[in-house]
Image (tube, rainbow, N blue to C red; front, side, top):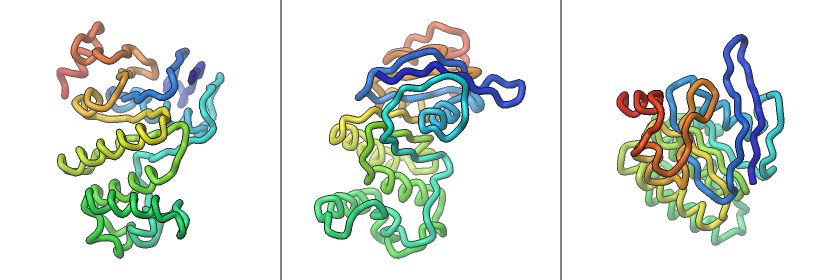
Amino acid sequence: MIECKVRKQYGARQALDLDCAFEEGKIYAIIGNNGSGKSTLLNALAKQIPYEGEIKAPKSVVYMTQQAYNFDFSVRRNVLLFVGKKESERIARAQGMMQAIGLVPLSAKNAQHLSGGERQKTALLRTLMQDGDLLLLDEPTSSMDLASSKIAQDFIVAYHERTGCTIFFVTHSVAQAEALADEILYMDEGRIVERGKDVTSAPSTESLRAFLQSR
């Protein structure tokens, strides 16, 4: 069980105020308006920021941040960064993913000279080539076209099936949250206001209803 009893403030603003638990091995989608605490929750789970309280979570964490950072070398080298030269099965898996999502023609290009969607594809594949018990993804497909986003979603599902890890991913797409998540977490003002598989189809708060109407 992942347990979060945590508070985080930025000046006078309450960025996180949580006392909750999550079953391990599930996929959680986090939705909410900008500034609602979504990325702050991921940063806290990854131990990337100081906070008050306690989080009990797996120590083996793989994290793709919203910035989709890539290193200053080729796309292929970025994707294979955490894969050994003799790990033929993992190399083949990475090459298959690159082919499926359209990165093979760009494999020799510097990964810092790509479009936003191409940068996300490269960063996501590098992330998914690392095995962890907790996978954190902050808007991993926001700059991708619809077809690439669907392929990326399939990659995330395959990773979950292969590793059995817990996944938290932030998305602004309600449809993506509904398609991928075992449970959807709706955040507002640093709190999880509603959570469940069906909260987007049957919201119980005016806050979530207003959010859904704005999509």
